[in-house]
Image 1 (cartoon, rainbow, N blue to C red):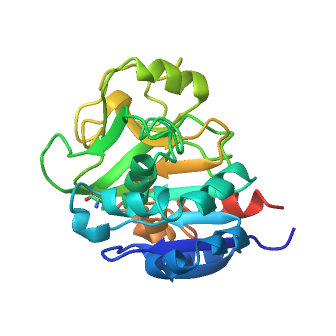
Image 2: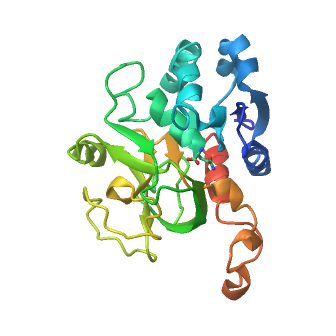
Length: 271
Ligand SMILES: NC(=O)CC[C@H](N)C(=O)O
Protein backbone atom coordinates (compact mmCIF):
# COMPACT_ATOMS: atom_id res chain seq x y z
CA UNK A 1 0.00 0.00 0.00
CA UNK A 2 1.14 3.56 -0.55
CA UNK A 3 1.91 5.79 2.40
CA UNK A 4 -1.00 5.97 4.86
CA UNK A 5 -2.74 9.27 5.36
CA UNK A 6 -2.71 10.55 8.93
CA UNK A 7 -4.92 13.25 10.41
CA UNK A 8 -3.59 15.17 13.41
CA UNK A 9 -6.35 17.27 14.95
CA UNK A 10 -5.61 20.28 17.12
CA UNK A 11 -8.09 22.21 19.22
CA UNK A 12 -7.80 25.53 21.08
CA UNK A 13 -5.03 24.87 23.64
CA UNK A 14 -3.31 21.95 21.89
CA UNK A 15 0.49 22.37 22.09
CA UNK A 16 2.20 19.21 20.83
CA UNK A 17 0.68 18.99 17.37
CA UNK A 18 3.68 20.26 15.36
CA UNK A 19 6.02 17.65 16.87
CA UNK A 20 3.45 14.92 16.29
CA UNK A 21 3.01 15.92 12.65
CA UNK A 22 6.78 15.86 12.20
CA UNK A 23 7.05 12.40 13.76
CA UNK A 24 4.40 10.93 11.45
CA UNK A 25 5.96 12.66 8.42
CA UNK A 26 9.45 11.40 9.29
CA UNK A 27 7.97 7.91 9.56
CA UNK A 28 6.59 8.26 6.02
CA UNK A 29 2.93 9.12 6.49
CA UNK A 30 1.14 11.78 4.46
CA UNK A 31 -0.12 14.07 7.18
CA UNK A 32 -2.90 16.62 7.35
CA UNK A 33 -2.76 18.92 10.34
CA UNK A 34 -6.21 20.38 10.90
CA UNK A 35 -8.09 22.39 13.46
CA UNK A 36 -11.00 20.60 15.07
CA UNK A 37 -13.36 23.30 13.76
CA UNK A 38 -12.41 22.37 10.18
CA UNK A 39 -13.13 18.69 10.86
CA UNK A 40 -16.47 19.61 12.45
CA UNK A 41 -17.43 21.35 9.19
CA UNK A 42 -17.03 18.10 7.28
CA UNK A 43 -16.94 15.04 9.58
CA UNK A 44 -16.98 12.61 6.64
CA UNK A 45 -13.44 13.71 5.78
CA UNK A 46 -12.32 11.09 8.34
CA UNK A 47 -13.07 8.46 5.69
CA UNK A 48 -10.03 9.73 3.75
CA UNK A 49 -7.52 8.80 6.47
CA UNK A 50 -5.97 5.62 7.84
CA UNK A 51 -4.55 7.12 11.05
CA UNK A 52 -6.39 9.49 13.39
CA UNK A 53 -4.38 11.23 16.08
CA UNK A 54 -5.25 13.55 18.94
CA UNK A 55 -2.01 15.18 20.12
CA UNK A 56 -1.01 16.53 23.53
CA UNK A 57 -1.77 19.86 25.12
CA UNK A 58 -4.41 21.66 27.08
CA UNK A 59 -7.43 21.56 24.79
CA UNK A 60 -10.03 24.08 25.93
CA UNK A 61 -7.74 24.97 28.83
CA UNK A 62 -8.51 21.65 30.54
CA UNK A 63 -11.78 23.33 31.59
CA UNK A 64 -14.37 20.89 32.99
CA UNK A 65 -11.49 18.38 33.32
CA UNK A 66 -8.76 17.65 30.79
CA UNK A 67 -9.99 16.49 27.40
CA UNK A 68 -13.67 16.65 28.31
CA UNK A 69 -14.80 19.27 25.78
CA UNK A 70 -12.76 17.81 22.90
CA UNK A 71 -14.17 14.39 23.83
CA UNK A 72 -17.74 15.71 23.57
CA UNK A 73 -17.01 16.83 20.03
CA UNK A 74 -15.75 13.36 19.13
CA UNK A 75 -18.65 11.44 20.61
CA UNK A 76 -21.25 14.03 19.51
CA UNK A 77 -20.96 15.72 16.09
CA UNK A 78 -18.09 13.49 14.93
CA UNK A 79 -19.63 10.35 16.40
CA UNK A 80 -20.92 8.76 13.19
CA UNK A 81 -17.75 9.40 11.19
CA UNK A 82 -15.50 8.29 14.02
CA UNK A 83 -17.63 5.21 14.59
CA UNK A 84 -17.02 4.21 10.95
CA UNK A 85 -13.32 4.88 11.41
CA UNK A 86 -13.16 2.67 14.52
CA UNK A 87 -14.92 -0.18 12.74
CA UNK A 88 -12.55 -0.05 9.79
CA UNK A 89 -9.06 -1.49 9.77
CA UNK A 90 -7.49 1.80 10.88
CA UNK A 91 -5.32 3.17 13.67
CA UNK A 92 -6.07 5.72 16.39
CA UNK A 93 -3.50 7.38 18.64
CA UNK A 94 -4.04 9.72 21.58
CA UNK A 95 -0.99 11.24 23.24
CA UNK A 96 -1.33 12.72 26.73
CA UNK A 97 -4.23 15.16 26.28
CA UNK A 98 -5.18 12.97 23.33
CA UNK A 99 -5.34 9.97 25.67
CA UNK A 100 -7.56 11.99 28.02
CA UNK A 101 -9.79 12.82 25.03
CA UNK A 102 -10.02 9.23 23.73
CA UNK A 103 -10.77 7.79 27.18
CA UNK A 104 -13.40 10.38 28.02
CA UNK A 105 -15.05 10.01 24.61
CA UNK A 106 -15.38 6.26 25.15
CA UNK A 107 -13.03 5.36 22.31
CA UNK A 108 -10.92 3.46 24.84
CA UNK A 109 -12.38 0.90 27.23
CA UNK A 110 -13.59 2.12 30.58
CA UNK A 111 -14.07 5.75 29.65
CA UNK A 112 -17.70 5.32 28.67
CA UNK A 113 -17.94 1.53 28.63
CA UNK A 114 -17.43 1.20 24.93
CA UNK A 115 -17.89 3.46 21.96
CA UNK A 116 -21.41 4.80 21.72
CA UNK A 117 -22.59 2.86 24.77
CA UNK A 118 -23.11 6.09 26.73
CA UNK A 119 -22.91 4.39 30.09
CA UNK A 120 -21.35 5.51 33.33
CA UNK A 121 -17.57 5.55 32.93
CA UNK A 122 -15.57 3.00 34.89
CA UNK A 123 -12.31 4.85 34.49
CA UNK A 124 -10.97 8.32 33.98
CA UNK A 125 -7.74 10.28 33.87
CA UNK A 126 -7.64 12.71 36.74
CA UNK A 127 -5.34 14.75 38.96
CA UNK A 128 -1.90 13.39 39.77
CA UNK A 129 -1.59 12.22 43.35
CA UNK A 130 0.96 15.00 43.83
CA UNK A 131 -1.76 17.53 43.04
CA UNK A 132 0.51 19.32 40.60
CA UNK A 133 1.80 19.31 37.06
CA UNK A 134 4.77 16.98 36.68
CA UNK A 135 7.33 16.98 33.91
CA UNK A 136 9.96 14.21 33.97
CA UNK A 137 11.27 11.14 32.16
CA UNK A 138 9.75 7.76 33.03
CA UNK A 139 10.49 4.15 32.17
CA UNK A 140 7.75 2.15 30.52
CA UNK A 141 7.00 -1.50 30.25
CA UNK A 142 5.39 -2.63 27.01
CA UNK A 143 2.58 -5.08 27.82
CA UNK A 144 1.31 -5.25 24.21
CA UNK A 145 4.32 -6.02 22.01
CA UNK A 146 1.82 -7.20 19.39
CA UNK A 147 0.12 -3.77 19.25
CA UNK A 148 0.13 -1.87 15.94
CA UNK A 149 1.99 1.04 17.57
CA UNK A 150 4.14 -0.97 20.00
CA UNK A 151 5.52 -3.83 17.89
CA UNK A 152 9.16 -4.71 18.48
CA UNK A 153 9.37 -1.97 21.05
CA UNK A 154 11.29 -3.01 24.10
CA UNK A 155 10.70 -1.33 27.45
CA UNK A 156 11.43 2.30 26.72
CA UNK A 157 11.92 5.70 28.34
CA UNK A 158 9.87 8.77 27.44
CA UNK A 159 8.98 12.12 28.99
CA UNK A 160 5.70 12.84 30.73
CA UNK A 161 4.26 16.33 31.21
CA UNK A 162 0.85 16.44 32.80
CA UNK A 163 -1.29 17.34 35.78
CA UNK A 164 -4.17 14.95 35.14
CA UNK A 165 -2.43 11.70 34.25
CA UNK A 166 -3.65 9.36 36.95
CA UNK A 167 -5.92 6.51 35.88
CA UNK A 168 -8.67 6.26 38.48
CA UNK A 169 -11.32 3.53 38.43
CA UNK A 170 -14.69 3.21 40.10
CA UNK A 171 -14.10 -0.49 40.82
CA UNK A 172 -10.67 -2.17 40.84
CA UNK A 173 -12.34 -5.32 39.48
CA UNK A 174 -12.24 -3.65 36.05
CA UNK A 175 -8.57 -4.66 35.87
CA UNK A 176 -9.49 -8.32 35.39
CA UNK A 177 -11.51 -7.38 32.32
CA UNK A 178 -8.75 -5.10 31.02
CA UNK A 179 -6.08 -7.78 31.41
CA UNK A 180 -8.29 -10.40 29.73
CA UNK A 181 -8.91 -8.02 26.80
CA UNK A 182 -5.32 -6.84 26.46
CA UNK A 183 -6.32 -3.28 27.35
CA UNK A 184 -3.28 -2.59 29.51
CA UNK A 185 -0.71 -1.52 26.93
CA UNK A 186 1.94 0.37 28.89
CA UNK A 187 2.88 0.49 32.56
CA UNK A 188 5.32 2.67 34.44
CA UNK A 189 8.44 0.78 35.47
CA UNK A 190 11.35 1.52 37.80
CA UNK A 191 14.02 -0.33 35.87
CA UNK A 192 13.98 -2.35 32.70
CA UNK A 193 11.83 -5.42 33.31
CA UNK A 194 11.31 -4.74 37.03
CA UNK A 195 7.60 -5.45 37.14
CA UNK A 196 6.49 -8.97 38.04
CA UNK A 197 5.66 -11.31 35.20
CA UNK A 198 2.02 -12.32 35.04
CA UNK A 199 0.57 -8.90 34.42
CA UNK A 200 -0.62 -5.94 36.41
CA UNK A 201 -2.20 -6.08 39.84
CA UNK A 202 -4.85 -3.68 41.08
CA UNK A 203 -2.29 -1.88 43.25
CA UNK A 204 0.00 1.01 42.71
CA UNK A 205 3.18 -1.04 42.96
CA UNK A 206 5.63 1.77 42.27
CA UNK A 207 6.14 4.89 44.34
CA UNK A 208 6.74 8.27 42.71
CA UNK A 209 8.69 9.22 40.74
CA UNK A 210 8.59 5.84 38.91
CA UNK A 211 4.81 5.86 38.82
CA UNK A 212 4.70 9.64 38.53
CA UNK A 213 1.04 10.21 39.24
CA UNK A 214 -0.28 7.32 41.36
CA UNK A 215 -2.00 5.75 38.37
CA UNK A 216 -4.11 2.66 39.08
CA UNK A 217 -2.14 -0.57 38.45
CA UNK A 218 0.78 1.63 37.30
CA UNK A 219 -1.01 2.07 33.96
CA UNK A 220 0.55 4.58 31.54
CA UNK A 221 -1.32 3.56 28.37
CA UNK A 222 -4.50 1.75 27.36
CA UNK A 223 -5.44 -0.09 24.19
CA UNK A 224 -8.52 -1.57 22.60
CA UNK A 225 -8.64 -5.37 22.45
CA UNK A 226 -7.53 -5.56 18.82
CA UNK A 227 -4.38 -3.46 19.39
CA UNK A 228 -5.21 -0.72 16.87
CA UNK A 229 -6.11 2.08 19.27
CA UNK A 230 -3.57 3.45 21.75
CA UNK A 231 -3.79 6.17 24.36
CA UNK A 232 -0.72 6.97 26.42
CA UNK A 233 0.31 9.69 28.86
CA UNK A 234 4.03 9.77 27.91
CA UNK A 235 5.11 11.75 24.84
CA UNK A 236 6.83 9.64 22.14
CA UNK A 237 6.89 12.71 19.86
CA UNK A 238 9.27 14.37 22.35
CA UNK A 239 11.85 11.61 21.84
CA UNK A 240 12.47 11.85 18.10
CA UNK A 241 16.20 12.48 18.51
CA UNK A 242 18.58 10.55 20.76
CA UNK A 243 19.88 13.83 22.16
CA UNK A 244 16.47 14.66 23.64
CA UNK A 245 17.16 11.99 26.27
CA UNK A 246 18.52 13.57 29.48
CA UNK A 247 21.44 11.10 29.64
CA UNK A 248 22.19 10.76 25.94
CA UNK A 249 25.89 11.54 26.32
CA UNK A 250 26.44 9.10 29.20
CA UNK A 251 24.44 6.39 27.47
CA UNK A 252 26.13 7.11 24.15
CA UNK A 253 22.81 7.47 22.34
CA UNK A 254 22.97 8.69 18.76
CA UNK A 255 20.61 9.12 15.85
CA UNK A 256 16.90 8.68 16.15
CA UNK A 257 15.12 8.71 19.51
CA UNK A 258 13.29 5.57 20.63
CA UNK A 259 9.94 7.39 20.53
CA UNK A 260 10.05 7.36 16.72
CA UNK A 261 9.54 3.59 16.72
CA UNK A 262 5.90 4.07 17.65
CA UNK A 263 5.26 6.25 14.58
CA UNK A 264 7.28 4.01 12.26
CA UNK A 265 5.32 1.00 13.51
CA UNK A 266 2.05 2.74 12.65
CA UNK A 267 3.15 3.60 9.12
CA UNK A 268 4.66 0.16 8.47
CA UNK A 269 1.45 -1.49 9.67
CA UNK A 270 -0.07 -0.47 6.31
CA UNK A 271 2.72 -2.08 4.21
N1 LIG B 1 1.11 17.47 27.80
C1 LIG B 1 -0.17 17.38 27.82
O1 LIG B 1 -0.80 16.86 26.90
C2 LIG B 1 -0.87 17.95 29.01
C3 LIG B 1 -2.00 17.08 29.43
C4 LIG B 1 -3.06 17.68 30.31
N2 LIG B 1 -3.73 18.75 29.75
C5 LIG B 1 -2.65 17.74 31.73
O2 LIG B 1 -1.88 18.58 32.18
O3 LIG B 1 -3.10 16.89 32.43
